[in-house]
Length: 108
Image 1 (tube, rainbow, N blue to C red):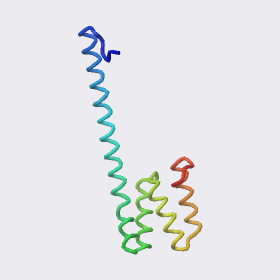
Image 2 (cartoon, rainbow, N blue to C red):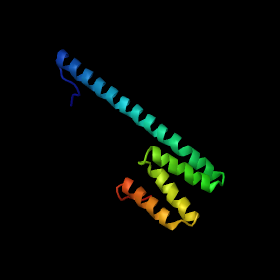
Image 3 (cartoon, one colour):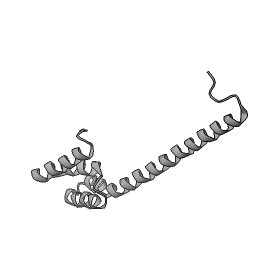
Image 4 (cartoon, rainbow, N blue to C red):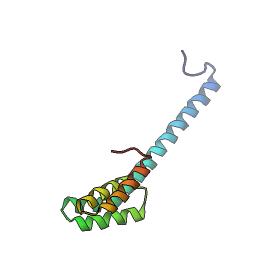
């Protein structure tokens, strides 16, 4: 099985197209990485505060991150667990429901 055409002109076009597709994929990988890093930066203060034992401040930091981007499933999950720990069951249920909606019904 040959991967490319035998005629030089067609082979050049096929290779050029493959190179463009590879560049397109790399571009979207970089964009995805940039978005992921941005989301992580928004959630980082909440995670650090929670690890330091400053639960109420962590709660506010997670909520602030969700105001910036309400599609942050990890923040919703962390908020649900934190609310449960802080004896706020209604909020915990609300954030867990939001988390599940963001994942399309899947759970961790």
